[in-house]
Image 1 (cartoon, rainbow, N blue to C red):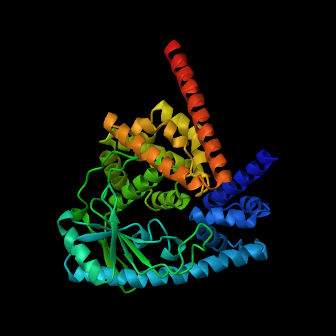
Image 2: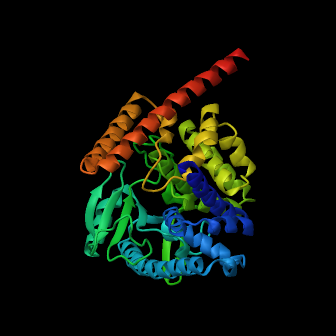
Image 3: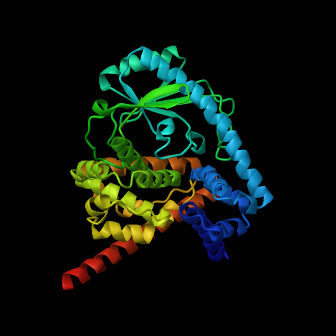
Length: 411
């Protein structure tokens, strides 16, 4: 029975993506005909697509064809999220004004900066924090400014992000919490560089964001942001970094698709992006893989320059991985990130040091996970099964890749 049930869930998820891409009422009907409404809505929430789905239904005149419980659920989410991001915008305004008054060189990335090119309205996004990139020489001044606003330094990541927290959660967030409720805490991250090297993606994309700062406004809130080319590259690389870790929010790929559609005829932009990305092979393959997946899920027609320089040159093993595993990984649940990307992870390592750091980080995370499962036998058993499944896929992948290599050499 598990197979047919899982196939129905997969079909419903794919129908949601197809509806976002094409607006076909039949796809919407496939989604709502699935009996597990709450399960699907939770997946849409975690994928960042529930509010986009609601917006597209209204824009296309399909809201009336939804069952009353679906309409109520989607409308309630949109209203709660509007209150949440309005509160976030007020706090964001305070931070921007304080940084501007202190003459700190900074720019806003992700979040509110994505309207309108990536997202038509900021209240359609489910973002939980504010992200700023700050000139390295002004990190201390930025930290001091945030401390005066009531933030606390919550620590730094090994790849350069510094986290800040204001207030304390009244109740610790859990996996079952309503994602759209206004939270009593405010979170902020400072990036010390625009394109950071991480354990899972050990490559760096160069560039000088400070020389191309743009300005945007949301009502009374005016703020600096990075150039459109930098914003596009940042968003694609951010999605890939999460894909490499086992799970990616599909709304990021949808937003990448929206941006491409909105700037389709801007040949200068696409040449600029492709030339910069193609200069670093590992990075070029990461972009090509992510853009191909965006096209697979949302039917995005890629500008010729991106296709020619980033997608078409993808090596055979990455194309095959996208064909065999990409959809499985992209449709996975947030609580069960996939390990299938590890089949091609080695392709993105520059040297043995990168590989050692990745293996060390992987086994540390698995040890922590195992420790949390010790007193929960059912989760421990599921974890063991997942690891066995990952090893089985690795073995099958090696055999298939080896067979394919033999076939190519024979021909």
